[in-house]
Every structure is written in C-alpha cells, then in structure tokens.
Length: 111
Length: 113
Image (cartoon, rainbow over all chains, first blue to last red; front, side, top):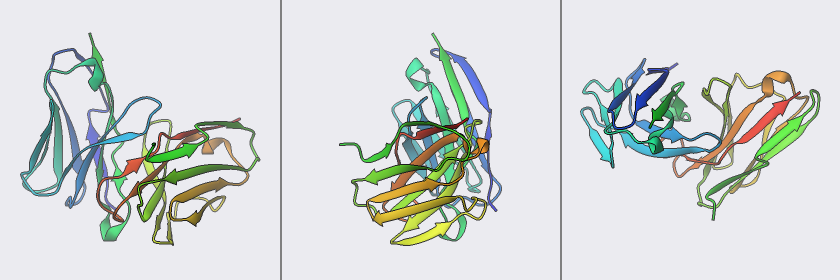
C-alpha cells in the first residue's frame, strides 16, 4: 500500500523566516494535496498538484511536485503567526480508494 | 452555512458504552468519509460512502458502523467503546470519489474513560 512520509515532524521558526516541508511517497503520485489544520478545527484545503514539475502558489505558500511525481514540497515565505498549524499532505489512493495522508508537520511561528 | 457539520464536537463517555456521531453536508456531494485522527495527529480513513455504496477499511473493528439515511448524512455508530477509541473523528465529503478536494467537518473529539 502507498505511504506518505512527511518531514520534518515539527518545526519552530521565527516570524519572517522561510521554511520548507517535504512529503515523499512510496509510489508514484497521481494527485497530491496539501491541507492545513488549526488546533480544534477541521482541515482546510490549500493546493492540489497533479503534473510532474507542477508548481502552485497561494499568497505566501508555494507547493511543488517533482518531475518523478514522488515528492512534494511546501514552502512558506516570510512566515507569520497565522501560518502556525499542522500541515498534512494527502494523495489519491490506488484503485480509486479514499485519500491517504502523511503524519503531518506541526509548525509553530514565534513572534 | 457550514458545508460539513458534525455533532457533537466533544464527547466524553465510559468504556463499554455505545455512542453515535452525526455528520451532514449541504454541498450536494455523493461521497462522504469518516477519518480517525489519533493522538499523534495521524489521519486514517475508516469508511467511504460513494453513491450508496459503503467501502469499509479492513482495519476498522466491526464495533464501528456507518449509517447513511440519505446522501447528505453519514453517521458513525460505535458499540462497546474502548479506551483506544479515544481520538478525533472527522467527517468529509467530496464531489468525486477517491480524488479531489475533500471538505472536512470540524471534528468530533471522543474521550473514552
């Protein structure tokens, strides 16, 4: 079965610093999704990537999918306290099964 | 209007009890899911319900049973609760099964004492 490995597990950065979160799949990714979760809340969809080499941005968050479609990165530029939360990558399951998720990266931003 | 709503948000109960969590979506989606998030924040699929077809994750104990009275509702019933059932349960829906953006509820935190 497919597995998603996220790194780092947790991250503390100073406000204004840049950071990157990685998501590596054990199998080829056909659809890669990034979600953010704030404490006590549900997951909020950030971005979806499908094509090798694809890159998408939303405000100060950029996500990329590598050419081989087995790794994705999420980059936050000039981090703010509002970026704090848990970031999860998700992937289309095989044979049309439900989305599977990585174990998440907890981001804390200190002011 | 909340797109995916779950009730209750918090549930504290004793071992051995039976409890239910309700989920409703007003997005017109045909597909709904239940996910379990453990204490380490790992989110695992429990059930998928697509166009009245229930797809069960093999690792879920049969004490857990989803019930869907109509396509806008997917409830989760749990029998004989155990300590290990303590977790946050998330309901989600999507326009397409197995792919695409999921719309999540805010979660229901279950604590079994």
